[in-house]
Image 1 (cartoon, rainbow, N blue to C red):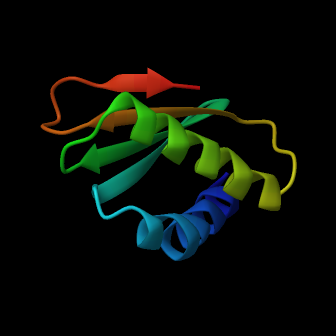
Image 2: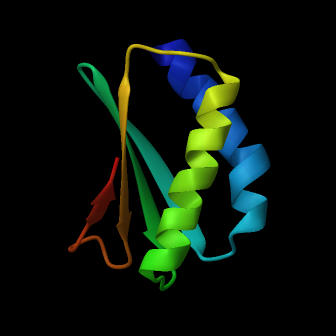
Length: 85
């Protein structure tokens, strides 16, 4: 799982972050058979979040099939999280 997380980090840094200025930072949290990617945003709306999730799915296809399930969470203040899978 560690190798997968390092690869995801590199891909997100290179391909996703330059496209979205609203992403303040992100964190990848492994948890058994799922990997959560939490995005701290500088304001956002559902349309942008869904666009980011679509981009993430495209990026994840680059690493090939994995046994992990991915969850994407978005927050602006670290209290309320909006979750997509």
